[in-house]
Image (tube, rainbow over all chains, first blue to last red; front, side):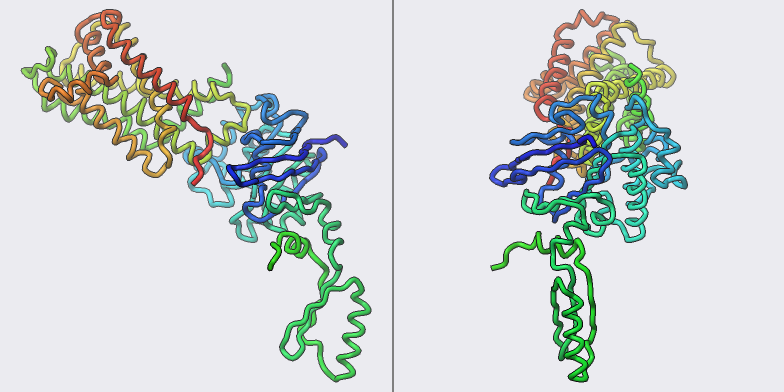
Length: 283
Length: 250
């Protein structure tokens, strides 16, 4: 499979602060790649260098075969961008806004089709200023798709959504997979990265601390966590051998005629990986 | 060219949709003209012109400051801080095409305003049709381009969208007064006259009076043309130094 994005030893400083300290990753064409990390980890800096907004201090970046710092209009035909904050003309209607942007591209998608793709059928003739936060975000996504790009950048596309709106957005973004789009997604929601991405890179303090498919990342942690209460005190065990540990715990409890109160057995999630990786060393 | 027309259409739609722009930058000069025009009588003579005629040149001058300078600067600050300009940079729309469409929209809006003002002057205050029409058009074109360029330049100096309107009004309203848009400068103290003499709007109103009322050619007033053009170039320099596509974070 061909490579859509290649980043090698990317570096960027703001004054004395090193925002990116040698970030490297590749994204294959057709892949959904998640950049996951806390605020200030360097996600947006990375994405904005790839989009051509920011200049890098070091390293090499290739996006769709070109260096974004020097790419021109022909390259912009092939990318779609959703910025971290919604950026729309308030006084246009949804359809007018999409038509305005469609006109910037050589071969745009049908505006009606985009409206359906992002689920704004009922709002197509409403002015942007009357849209809810979630609807605005969907229009942002529509504007990113109207040029029929190969590669779409989504910078925190669901931040501030309620759970229902987030689920709808996931369905839409998941639907882009069928269109064969390559997607670079940044998020600080673990469930979002786990749900949508083929591969995830966890970023912390300007460095990638883990990279791989969500299932592989979770496999690196002790597989299972067992929780229960004894004398009102919560006990947490992490184990590679849940069967044996559970058996022993149960035997012990039975022998003592006690109950394993509040017993919970849970596989490690991406959240655990993330917390383990992003937790700063505590002294 | 297709792109320019497409973007121009979009810009014109955005312009007509903005109530704030329509009122403060487009309607206000017209309202002031009707109100003040009723105050000046035929017997009032200002700078050698009939009162209402002088006021017409003053209000076209105020209009150019309001529409081309203030309106454009405010719109650009709002678009920059809301992230729209940044978003546009990620599309294939070339920056020069965008700027050209924005400039053309401003010229069209101001041309309509000037025509309305002249028509009102003729209907309400018995003004004559502009004496030298080609030179009048040339003067209006020169003024609107120069003030629009200043507007683009100044937008880069305004940091926040909140208050952009207030900051820019604080610039252009005193400018309009000092430049004699509302009344004659003849009773100004010397120091104020000195300031007024270097301002572009003073020269624009003078030039307009000379060609529109006096029937002179624009080339009979090279000094006015030079000062207005110089301010336009100053706008370009400001823009090349301070204009930004991305919001000024924080």
